[in-house]
Image (cartoon, rainbow, N blue to C red; front, side):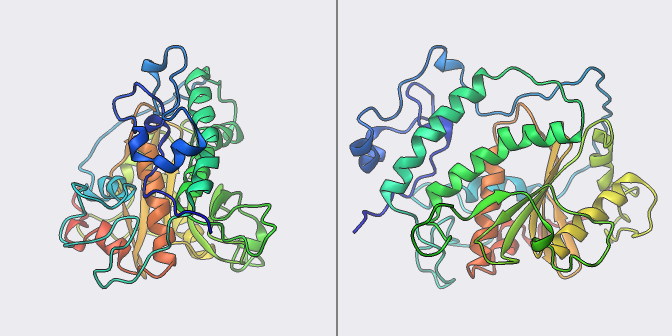
Length: 346
């Protein structure tokens, strides 16, 4: 029988020796048995390794920036915390005493999915290490189109999320031989659409988190735009009357401005692909959102896509929250995004 894995999230900046947050071999004895040198030895220039996304560049950079008051401020940080394993000294989302994080400890909320075997975790670590080194050696790539930005999001975000999911969840692909792994991020397709015969303005999300091979078993979406078609101020203007009404937060379905159109697209993608969680980026800014009611969409504050080391943690926390909610932890969105933190004041 396979030994259970460690309740650890093996972020790439934690598996390289010499970095401030590096794990020690005592933290993961099962991994030490598989890899005699753990954490991995730092490559040349290892002290300069960073998990932050690389800047996307183009010949002409068209950006605008305006920062109104952005709420709720708790969602992003609560997702970062949710990505951490449960344990002593780990902060929990406010107002929910004893709320479990990525593993449940029996306070009456029901059990989340268990961690995978130590062997499965160990098999992913070499890929994580290789990705981290390659990520830091990559040079900026000139963006020429929306597909080129999607490609970069796949390389810098999706590949890492898929590896981290394999350190947290057992394979849901079905009976052996399991040549594929689920849950995993992939491209959306007509068969994943709830009503593919219906023509909508929402279209298809660029990336879709499949919880299993079952049809319509989706957890989250990611929509990718470009900063020249959707400048930064389109994202910040979501939190203004260009995106929704002040105080009530109601947005106009017929609004001609880009913030309203973007909200309508994201809502439609969540609806037609049966997901509650998602993220959207233009390659410069990124925002996470969650359906907190039948007709309510709550967004995090906006963060920089590149240079912000919390982006990957917030996104993997979003993945964990979406999958755990699908496994039966219905309280997750309301715990990570408390009602009292949802406001429409701008």
